Image (tube, rainbow, N blue to C red):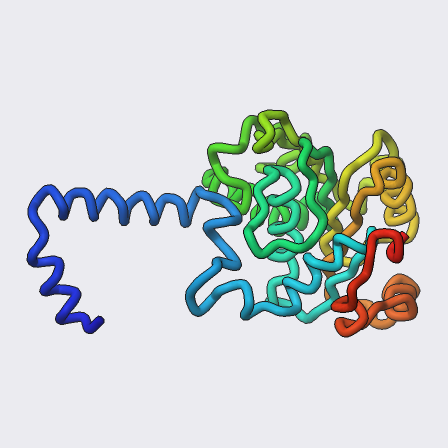
Length: 255
């Protein structure tokens, strides 16, 4: 349909129909801002539909078979979007129709972590919650955020949040940073841990322990800024190619 045809069609609308159309467009705009992950990324249709992002989709899909995953790529290609999107899915229980990865049908308790408290705030918190003063414009829908607890010592930083899960229960997300050291990562069992950028070995090891009893997930989104470290090498040595991932794996094969 051309612009002229669209304008002609609009000119035929009655005042009541125009008001309804304006309200619908305003609602759509509001959802794009505060409706959360399902309205923000990987739609079913359009030029930015999910099929256009095979690397992201393969990363999500592999979560069904592997507890530990690494999304390693350059800067500004959507690594943090991938980590934030999956975290929003697990926290809310809302998964897109095309999702083939791990699914939690109960409220979850997870951690998200970055290098420092500041980077956790500026990257992870911004993805999930939105910028300071615009809470509810991130990947977790505004109407699903029940509470935000401030982190002492870092302006505008979140320490933890509660999210309404679609089951009616409450999911919890703790915001951590590697500079808090290993002790901060000790504690109760977790359903998942999202780490943005390469973690220290002791922090990663503690996170593995935290997810053992839940058969939980650890997913890392990172750019290898330090080169071929032992952490990166371990993943490369044990990596599974896309071709192998696409085979008919079973959960028993992955354990």
